[in-house]
Length: 122
Image 1 (cartoon, helix red, strand yellow):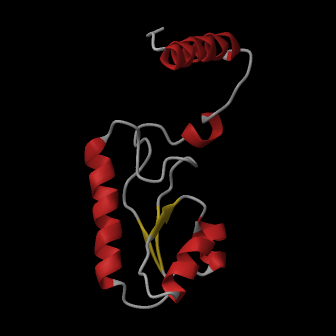
Image 2 (image 1 turned 90 degrees about the vertical axis):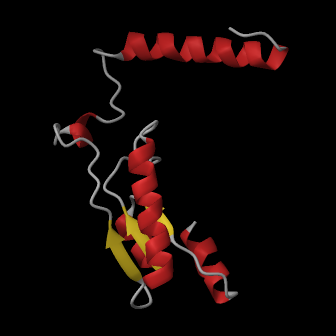
């Protein structure tokens, strides 16, 4: 996305990147970047947390309007889990403690998807 943003900017279309891979995005040299210290794949906040998502999108829109200089990075004040600083070590971990539950959830999801393809609900 960073390279697409640079191309759009070169064509006169202003952009803002919202993301978690700070080193990569800044190395690409995007014009405006909102850094969120969240797990990859969740740039605008936690799923179903509409208030958090609105704040992050609002920050991005504010940056679009008022970036003081090229290659501006702003860090969102949001935190993934204020009560758990160790979420990074556990996020997306698959081990013996959760392997069976994750496999069962995968099977349930595949059944729902198969039902949707055939016009039936799982």
